[in-house]
Length: 256
Image (tube, rainbow, N blue to C red; front, side, top):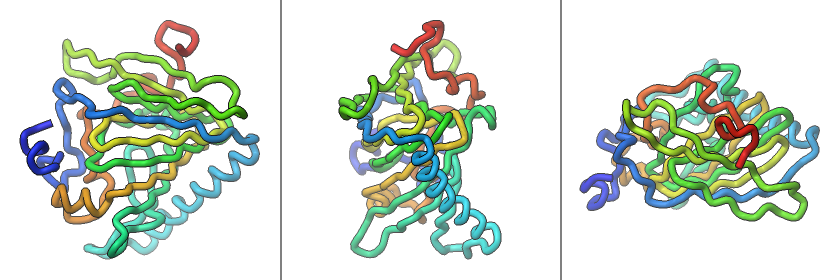
């Protein structure tokens, strides 16, 4: 990162900036993300879980539209590039973690991919998919995938392609793992490690725990708990869906 990061722990130049960009040519991940396959579910059960959790997010956003949060108060219904989010469990005095739910956008429907990014604090996420929906998880570093449980059929599909939207003459490998339909996969995201989520299909949610929400807000000198302000992007613009909707390696015909 920068000397400021090394001496103070801060990552952001402007603490409250919600669209701060880091030069992808210079960024090197300080660690790797780790994925743990957890569970495969019957389609009807998976859909019930996803719909139930997504319903909480949608209800929170309906409430926000009808009665907007007053200025200066904690806004629990927020938006991110991958979808609508709801701070289900905010931090409180003596407990510095919080919990978000995110209702994914369908990448193909919007014809937009979220950007590669990193966070100023570590994250733990559980990705849950329903029928006819996958989540493509990507990083600039290879993702560690832990062994699947005995009830799981086959390994998670993985492949590498080129990160889209880089400056002219710049190539960065993008490492991808596909979360299949009707499944739960956990992901541990170390602070400052690049990642990107894109759901293809209508039925996907994330249950995300931020174990150092208050700490990172103080460390970065932010004025409030806003996920977008705790994000640093590695691209200026979003790319079209055809750069993230595929679930196989380019020209390969099958994941590797």
